[in-house]
Length: 313
Image 1 (cartoon, rainbow, N blue to C red):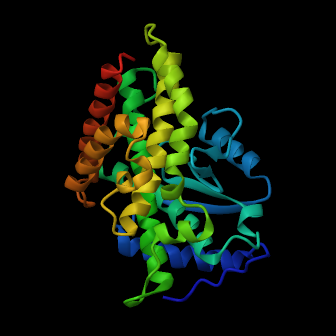
Image 2 (spheres, rainbow, N blue to C red):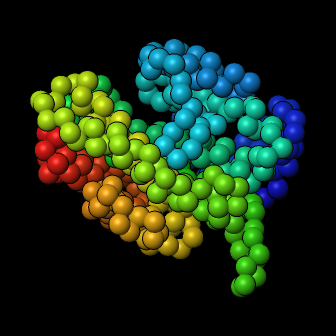
């Protein structure tokens, strides 16, 4: 497999983008089956937010203004489906980040592989028979819980796919000789590690979480959405951190000592472990729509149990 030579300080020309995308695509096809019907356009743009909002308009959704900040990091790439059956996608990359001297070739490849796997994952599910994408608005606690779990697991899965691409193209020197570069080590090297930031994320979100817990009134759609976002943001950070932990051979994100006595860790450890155990039990690409639904069922109930125990519901 040719090494994708990505320049550090210039926006790559179209032919180089095509080469990089095709190299990553070939490696992703070794990791998971290739969908039958899928078209992805990669756009590297100076106005990242405007490009994301334009893709949203084309897709027929209105999420308002795009915010690239997330618990534990900043978004530099976004993949958006442009039609209902998820056959046409636009993967948008922030050119300021892509062309920065501080952005390594390894990080560019990792992000692009992650983003390109989102469309593949969604189309594999739909081609297998999934209708989860037709669930509609998040307007009930159950839908909020399910959305939170599915979103976090998608980020986890796309990070694992990126890890496979990264390890195929880059190596690192270890005591046992050169080994594939794991995504967890990349994050620790360039300061973008979710595993290293998850305790800070918990500290940052804890006051908001406590505020949500302190309100005991009946759950209306707006409040359900708020709960889903707060829980969803935490789960998404855990999904990224879990992928990094596994790439380093750790048993999971909650193995790091910084979370041992954290108040949010005490609340989220049980549901997250249940979600991960369901994922481990339902691995594989055959009947992925059924497996994903089974994982979502477990995760949905785990979050509903959490909210009920905390008297949110």
